[in-house]
Image (cartoon, rainbow, N blue to C red; front, side, top):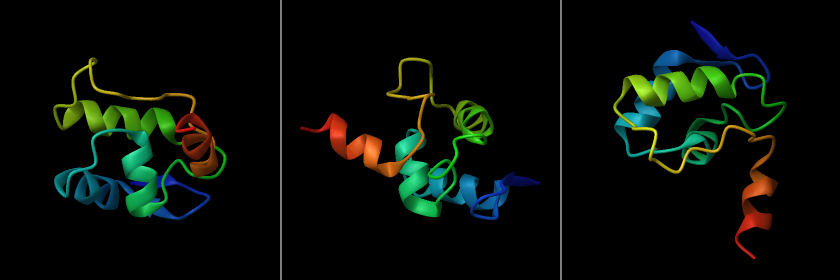
Length: 75
């Protein structure tokens, strides 16, 4: 299933990123690009993270719009 139209990322790529250690939307965006442009796919990425066992206590950010947003939060 196509998850991210902006970057043409499929669910299998998101799952692979999670298997490789992605634990939140930012990690997924860095690994495969899903969620890094318009943010429309973030709910799907969040669902895939939850299916993989990322509990609600994980540092999940549902308002992801750009990788630059993450950089701003580190300062």
